[in-house]
Amino acid sequence: MRMENAALDLLRTVFGHADFRGEQAEIVEHVADGGDALVLMPTGGGKSLCYQLPAMLRDGCAIVVSPLIALMQDQVEALHQQGVRAACLNSTLDAETAAKIEREWLDGDLDLLYVAPERLLGGRMLGLIERAHARGQVALFAIDEAHCVSQWGHDFRPEYRQLTVLHERWPDVPRIALTATADAPTRREIVERLALDDARQFVSSFDRPNIRYTVVHKDGGGIRQLLDFLRRHDGESGIVYAFSRRRVETVAEQLVEAGIHALPYHAGLPAETRAANQRHFLQADGVVMVATIAFGMGIDKPDVRFVAHIDLPKSIEGYYQETGRAGRDGAAAEAWMSYGLGDVVNLRALIDQGEASDERKQLERGKLDALLGYCETTQCRRRNLLAWFGEHYEVGKAGCGGCDNCLEPPETWDGTVAARKALSAVYRSGQRFGAGHVIDILTGKTTDKVSQYGHDRLSTWAIGSDLDARQWRGVFRQLLAAGLLEADAERYNALRLTATAGPVLRGEQSLSFRREPEPRSRRGRRGSS
Ligand code: ADP
Ligand code: ZN
Image (cartoon, rainbow, N blue to C red; front, side):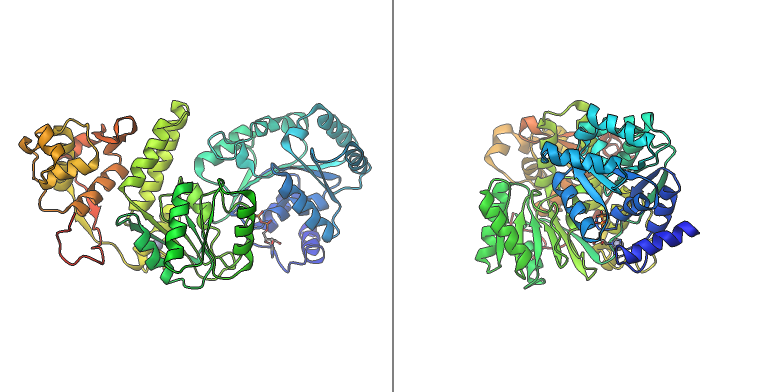
């Protein structure tokens, strides 16, 4: 227990924290004792201390691999302020400074040395590690942002793949890999690619109890619903994420017209505008930033009260990271999303038309399905979200207390017959048309297209007049989400049946659908569309 006391001492005297958080104490002890570790902790959880303290407790200097030069410099500066002997080696240094840092390291005057992966893997650096190791000057290897090793993630860094060399050449030096991206496939890949099979895994809870999750189905473009939502957050700071640059611009304009203090942010804006808008968001109160996902990395504003997605986000991990920017201060915050049939079709098309390999497309489709599963679930959303991170969230009788489904359990209806009608209408019209036209067939709406193709003579003509167009859109959205239908991006999003549609068509499988809430503005059951 001597080690633990020493660690706690350092935590208090050097870092000024009263106590360890979560599993920090165990992680520090394990690594300080020479064990390998894989640490999965949400952003803001306190990962840095997990290698900084062992670095100070063990003999020699810790080598920290970190992908972003800016983050490295921030860390080193913060450490200096606390009186910790730290430095970073990166491409921005002149030869003289780099040589000075190397000397300090080999002389045993550093506790932490941050290095970019490409620099670490250069022959020079590996040679230096060899020398330092011979002198007992390598305390541990820390691999920050370990998910960069994953080819499927957004942050893939090919050099991360070669980091196994550390383990191969210096197997006696403990390694600690850390990440906040913790879905099961990424985790498996990290273990495999970094040869961490024997590392102890420390998985923190990814639950953000102060965030309340809500998903609504788009009625039109989603703007009216967004405005309703924003009215509940009058005067508060928040972020609205939208699908594309153009969409960001229109949504921002519409919010401004509605009297909301909104600003746009996307990579297509001039650098000065972006910087000014960001500064304004950080410094002023009650600014709503309408942005693409280009906004948010490294933004540390504790009192963001809401994150809204007016369009479907790109993946569950993305959604988790983006919504995670709300409520950093621990006070109540909201994650709100609106999504519709068009979003599903758009995202599927984006994947299908992309340049990626078939293997990757398959993986992306799987991820999209998981996201749609989150949107369509009638169960606790928190549980669904955390399950993606391999975490089992026990939902009590009263629900999680922080998601729409728990707070107001949705009504469901037996959609078996409706699904069969929808699938047959797609099939009978030749699997060549988008949802709009198929819905016209189902509801018996005579249009030019219907007449042109003689679709009013199909056996499925008007068999769905018991539901209105809006309800049918809900059915199609859920059929797409469930993977019973797919949209062909190369043929104007023509719908076609997938292999899983068979049992439903044959009446062998029943389906339960979420009842679509009536739009506020319409009273009658039959909509105007
Ligand atoms: P991560 O890298 O996981 O995103 P950091 O290591 O940057 O998180 O820590 C996030 C914040 O939490 C920092 O401000 C840090 O000082 C603080 N922190 C970390 N550990 C503790 C602790 N045991 N007690 C109090 N604050 C802590
Ligand atoms: Zn819930």
